Length: 584
Image 1 (cartoon, rainbow, N blue to C red):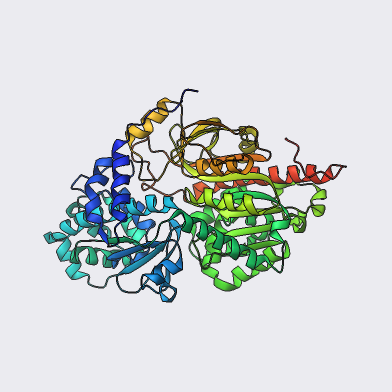
Image 2: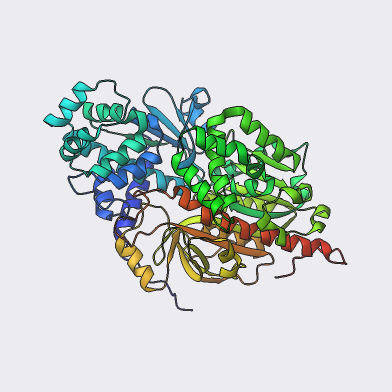
C-alpha cells in the first residue's frame, strides 16, 4: 500500500537529533554550546528568532516555564531514568530537594549549588529537555550581552535587591535597551515574578554555559522505570482496591477535571470561593461570576468554579486540600503520587462508590443508577509526554484483567482552528514509528459541542504525533497541512502503538499504514487547541490558555465521563452478565 505521508523536508531536525544523541553517548559532560548551531539551523517554530541578535521572548518564556527557578544557578544537568543510576555515578539525589517547573511535570532535584538531576520517563523527555535547555541558553546569552550596556547597567546598579514591579516610566528605556517590546518586557516580569530583577542581575553577571551528561538511557531502564511506577500504584492501593482483578477504563487527562466533576466540591464550596475572589482582590473573576449569575444560561458556572477552586486550594493551604481529599476518599477516588520514579500522578476511581447527587449535572444523562453495581475502575493518569504514553499503556494492558476502553484528552497545536477549539482525529501519523494509524474514534462533534461555549468542534481530523515541541518548523507543518493534517500533538501515536500490541501478537510495525478498527475495546481521542503555530505569534510561548482553557477542558472531560458511564451502565445491565461493551 502506498504511503500517504510525504517526506517533510525536516532534514535539519533529524540532524539536530542525531547530533545530541551521538554526543550524549559520551561518558563525560557535553556543553550545550555545541548544539547551538544545529538548533538554530533547525529553524524551530517555537524559536523563530534563534539566529536574530534580538531576544526571542516567546522562546525564552516557553523555556523558563518548563525549567525550575533554580536554573539561574545551574551549570550542570544530569539525566537518568532511575535513582540508582545517579547513585552509581556518585550523586545521592535522594538527599537533594525536589524542584519543579510550572509548565512541565518531571521529577527534578537540585543540589543547592550548580547541579540539576532530571529523571526521564522515555526518549521523549530527552527530545523535550535538550532543545529547551539550548533555547534557554541562547536567549540568556543574548540578554547577557545587552545587559552590559549603559542603561541596563544603571538600572541594575540602582536596584540591587529589588522585588517590586517595574514602574511605567522604567519600562520604555529598559525595553529599548534590551531590544524587546514593552509588552514582552512585562511578560518576562510576569513569568519571573519577584525574581525578575534578580534574574537580570544573574544574566548580566555571566554568560550561561550549561553542561549536560546522560547517566543512563537504555530501553530496559525505561521499562524498569515504568514497572516501578506500576509497583507504587499497587502498593498504594493494596489495602483498598485489587487493581489487577477489576475491569478498567483507562483515561489520560489531568489530575483535576475528572475529580472536580465527580466530587461536586466546588459547588458545595461556592460561597467560600466567591468570598475568596472578592476578598483577595480578584476583580476580573468577581466580575465574571456576576456576569454568569446575571445571564439566563448558567452552564458555565461549574467551569468557572472549577477554575477558581485551583487558586483557592493553592492559597488556602492544607485545610482546604484536606477537606477535598476527604470527599474524594468518600467516593472512592484514590490519588497516587509518584514518589520514587518519574513524575506521573495517577487516580484510581471506583465507579460503584460515586454519589449521583454529587455529580456535575452535565453527567447525569450519561450515568444510570445501575452504576452502584459496577465492578469497574477508572484509571486516570496525568497525561505523560510522548513515548512515556506507550510505556505506561503497555504496562497497564499487560497487568489488568480486562481493558474496557481507552480515552485520551490532551492539548495540541491546531493548523486550521483557533485556540480553544476541540479537535477529534481518526487518522494519526506517528513520527516515532513512522506509522499512519487508522482507527474508529468513538467520539464525534455531537459528543462535545453541547458543552463547549466558546469554541468549535472539528471531527474527522488527521493528527501528527511529533517528537517534541521544538522539533517542528514551518516547512514541517506546511507539508503535513497540505496533506490534510491539522493537529500536532505528542502522545496519540505512542498510545496507538501500545493499543496495537494489546490485541495483535507482535510488536507494532514501522513505516506502515496500520488499521486499528478491530481493537476489541473502545478508543477515543479528544484534543483542544492550545496554540495555532501557523498564525504569526501564536505559538506556545506567546501566551497562556488560562481561563479560556477551562471551557474545552471540561467539554472534553464531560464527553469522556458520559461515555464511560453510558458504556458501564450498558455492560452491567446485560442480562447474561457479559462484560463486553456494546458499541454505542
